[in-house]
Length: 122
Image (cartoon, rainbow, N blue to C red; front, side, top):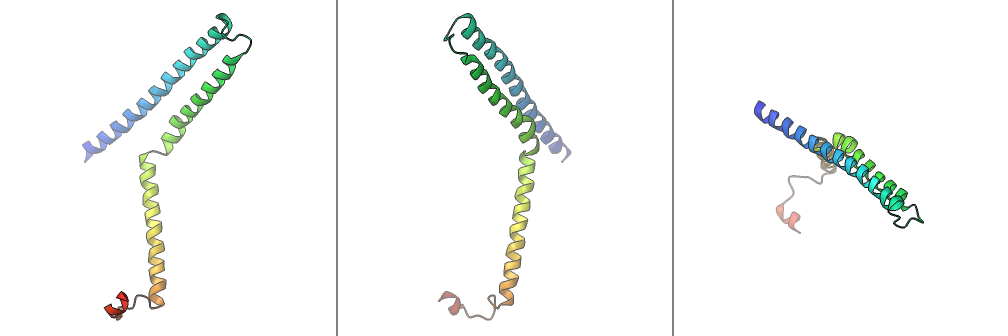
């Protein structure tokens, strides 16, 4: 059992490390790409009349911020364990509602055991 728990912790840590590694790679790529856009626009005079590089950098920055939020907020708090716990809570809530409805119907006589089978089929 302890080996299984250790393996689960290792896998979780490995996945988390991969997420962070991808984010750091995205950040480095963003920096290189931003410099490339500036050089392309200002040094190589590609559509120099517009400062399009600013919009391209801001759009990419927006995507980087979403990636950052996903890794450090969403994945940290809303992982598989959270999903499992929430599913169990929802199942328990539904079971409670079903039990209450069955008790209500039983009080009204809908679950009368003396009902003949022919009446149920008709």
